[in-house]
Every structure is written in structure tokens, then in C-alpha cells.
Image (cartoon, rainbow, N blue to C red; front, side, top):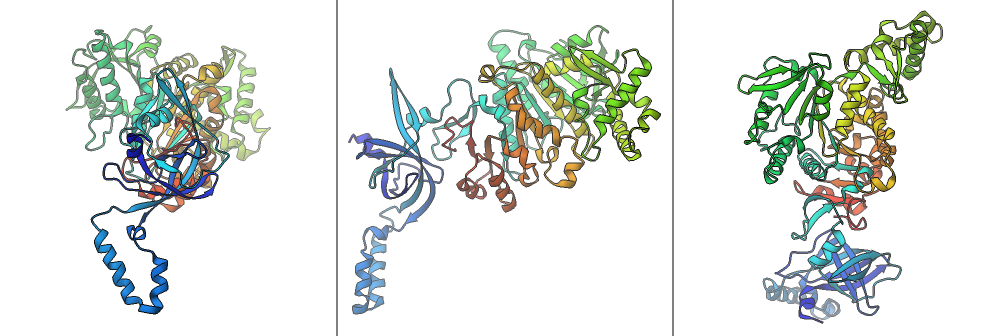
Amino acid sequence: MSQKAQRDIQGIVTEVLSVDKIKAIIFSSGSQPLVGKRMPLKVVDEQSNSEFLVEVTDVKPRDPTLDYVDFNELVNKVPQVGITPIKDAIKAVRERIIGRFRPNWEVTCRVLGKITKDTKGKKTQIKLEPSFFPVTPYSIVERLSDEELDSILKPKGRSVYLGKHALYRGLQVILDHRKFDHHLAILSQTGGGKTETAKRIAFELHKNNVPILIIDPAGQYSGLRPASGERISLLEKIVEEATYKAEAEGNPNLSSYLKVTLLVPPACIERKKNVPLASLLDRLNQLTPKCDLFGESYVYVIKNFGSNGVKKVSRVNPSEGEIKYETVDKEEPSKIIRDAPILIVALRIPCQLRATIIDRLRRGVSRYFDIIIRDAARILEEKKKDGSVISERNGVQYYDILKIREEFPSEELRSHYHTASIEAASRELRIISCQIDKDFDADKTQLLIERILEKGSITIYDYLISNREEGLIITWLLNEIYEKCNDEFLMEEELDYWPRIVAFLEEAHRLAPSEQNEAELSYSLTTVRKIATEGRKLGFGLCLISQRPARLDSTTLSQASTLIALRVRNPVDQRYIRDSCEAVLEEDINLLPELGVGEAIVSGVSVPEPRIPI
């Protein structure tokens, strides 16, 4: 055996419990970190000339006295000499070895598979195969080399860098972003680091040109409401990155590197003294020292989609909250929606809605809403006969909600439905109408959705989570994206290279609640559940972010094929994660309360070798 192999020896297999479970003693070394749970190790079985990959599931310190004292012999002498001399003998041994020897460790390991090596040129590719035969007792346990770890745990091609391995500090934890359309979940108690983890993943996806949508209820991604001590928001980081790219390539025009859309409630733009927005725009401008964002027409604001609602930002005064605007030509709005490097939109619902989306813009308490609205549209269209109520674009039917609302309900409609059903539909229609921009038509809707789905685009919807009606707008937005992905269905081969879009849902338990009373009042539950169950085939991935997993809809959470679990101490949440996530093991759950801030267990299909959780 080579000198290097001798240095890498960690221990020896002491007991084989089953084909997939062993026990071993690990010898501590001052030059290497102590063994820990979830640590991958290699077992060299010289008898069968095989190597196995194992993962530590349990660790116990082994008293070094056991290596120097035959306790059975001492026990047999108790009747002859009494217990006191026996205690003195053990104490003497302990005094001699404490400080001279490090304690060894008894570990239980899960056998992940048999290691096979495929050498191509100078590189050796390691693969895992199922193990059908048990490890031989007294096989050698070795520490994996950096090259072996990289070969097993590093995905091929583009990927997402997450952080460093807790036990192998030289190993980067890298996820395969091509699997993100299988959905992922980031779960943690408050303060565990879930939002920072999501920011890193979003930034890495952006660098790989994957379109991103972020539902941001606290302004932590946009920078409109920065947290105390936060150096830079995700939006600012992306603008900074675009500036570096432009400078590196000697291109003074940022338009080729930047496609940012910030969606906000109308009140966020309409306030006269707008310190949060003015401060954000000023910070963005400071990140581009060689480019004046305002003087060179990079920042546009859409207050509404009418002829005078699209403005160019010309100057800001952050201390006074003052933003100066310039009106653009009437022919410009469509071009601005397509091409503006930074676009800020006061988001409302369009006046023309897809027929397929109307039935999803309702709460559980209004079960016949979509049927009643369809009948109302048909009756009104037959009456007007001008095609203004029901129109068609590219084979898709649209209903004009405001026109339906004006004459709702007709006498004919009342004669077909129960009064309670009509009143419930009228109430929902009134709520939707209050959120509508009358100039936001189907054509502008498609331009906005196409912008969101453009490669390299990032869209952040910053809204106030206390406003229940915002769930209605989120539902409409997610449905429009889903339908667009469905219209432009990508073949499975194309989806192997990138997701069509990944939507990050902060406070996911509010958008997809599990509790019955909240679910009945939720606009978004049905839509989020639909994307979770059917979005993968369209390349529409979800990233569910929550500090209360037990309040998150189990059907939605169960579809997350990658789990990033940070510290979770609530036993109810722990049990819910175990019962809802296929990607999690019992050993993972036991580790959750012990994790520090920023430490996580990562498992599932996005891990390069799914059998090896990190």
C-alpha cells in the first residue's frame, strides 16, 4: 500500500449489519477534521477487490480505555478482589492515556453504492452502481480524495454554486440547475439563512441566463426596503454584474447585458414623496459610474398602460424622494416594454383576460364563478354583436372583464342561477375589477410576459403581503406565464439544457396554505399547486421558500424534488418535512435542529449524485 494511501486510512469496518448498513471504528487524526454525520467515506474491500461509497449516519465517541483494558477479565476478578481495586486500575489507565491519545469514533454508515472507475485519457470518472453484496468485515475505511469528490459531486456543464461542504472544506457544493424545473424547496426557521440562500441561487441562475421571477413580499430582493446591515440587494448585484461585463468587453452600452423588470403595487409609484424608489434608483446609478442610467434612457416607469402612462426617468433626488419623469412618444410603449434595460411597472390586472385563466381567479368560496362569467360574456356578446366582449388573438379567447362588469348580472343570467351564486360571482367580479388597468390589453400583456420569459431576464414583484388582493395579481401573473409556456411548449430535449423559467415564492405558505380556512380564501393555492404538479413538462420550475413548512400545502411541497433544509427546530415542521418531501431521509430530519446559520442539508435530483445528500 502506498504511503499516501496509508495517510488516508480513517478506520476499519467492525460489523456488517446488512447489505446497505455497516459499523466502523474511525481513528482520529490531528491533521484531518473529525468525522461527522453526512460525511461521505470510501470502504476498500480487498477481499472482493471492490470499493464502496458510504455515508455516516451516526457518530459516537469511543472510550480509548477500551483499547487498553480487558473488561471481561476485570469483571471475573471482582469476586476475588472486590470492586475498589478494579476502579483504581481503570482510573490508572485513564490517567496514562488522557492527553496522549485522541478518542476514536464508532460510526454507523449507510452504503450508497459500489464505486466503478472509468479512465478516459488522464481523467478518471467515478460512477456509482447499486450494491447487491455486503461489505466484507474488517475492510479499510478511507477518506475520499478531492479528485474523487469532484468526480462524484461536480455536475457537468453549467451549474449553480451554493457554498462549501461543511466537512470537506475544499469541496464546492454545486447543483445542477437543469433539474430546477423539477422544483425545489428552501425551508428554515426565521434567521436560518433561507433568503440569502435563495438570493445566491437566483444570482447563479441569472449568470446562466435562466429567466427568473421572484415574488418578494418584504423588499429583500429589490432593495426597496433593504434590511438593516444589508450591503447590497440582489437587484443591485445584478446591475453591478452587468456593469462589470460591459467594462470587460469594452462595451459602453448596458442594454446588451441588462433586462430587469420591477413590478410594484400602484401606490409604490404614485406617492409624491417616494424616498424608497428614489433611493433605489440612485443606488443603481452609482453602480454604473461610466454610464448615466437616467441621461442615457435606461430606466422607464409604467404608471399605467395608457398613452401618457409610460415615462422615462430623467433625474432623482433621493433625500427628498423626488423623481423627475419625461413623457415618451405614443408609439414607444410597446418598444419600451420589449427593450428597456430597467422597467418599473405599477402592476394591475389587464382588462382582457384569457378564458382559461378566469376560472383560476376565484377563491374556494365562489365555486361557480367561471361558469357564470362565461355565460354572462356569451349573453352580452350576443346582445352587442360587435366582438368587443369576447375577442380572439392567435387562437386564444379573451374576455373583456370591465364590459361584463358594467352589465352584470342580466335578467337572463339571474333566471339560470341561484341568487347566492350570482351574489358570490358579483362580489368576486367587483374585486377583480378594482385591480384592473383599463388600458392594459391582451397585446401589452403578451409583450410583458414575453419580456419576463426572455433569456437572462429577472423580474421581481415587490408587494405588501398584508394586502390579500395582491394574491389575485400574483395568481394572474403565474397563470399568464404558465399559459405562455404551454403555448410555446418546448420539447423534452430542449428542457434538458435549461428551465424555461424559475419562480421564487417567498412566504410560500401564504400563497399555498395548508389550513382549510386559509385555503378557501386563497386565490393562489390552486395555481401554485397546478404549476407544482404540471409545470415540469413545460420547463416552469418553482422554488418554495418558507419558515413554516407545516403551513405549506402538502401536495405542493411533495413535488419539490430538491430540498435545501436549513435549521428547523419546531418538531411539527420537522415531521411535516419528513412526511411531505420524498428527497429527505430520517437522518436528515434528526440533523435539522443542530445546524448553524447558513448551514444546510441538500438532497434530491439537483445534487449531482442524488444518492449522496450534502
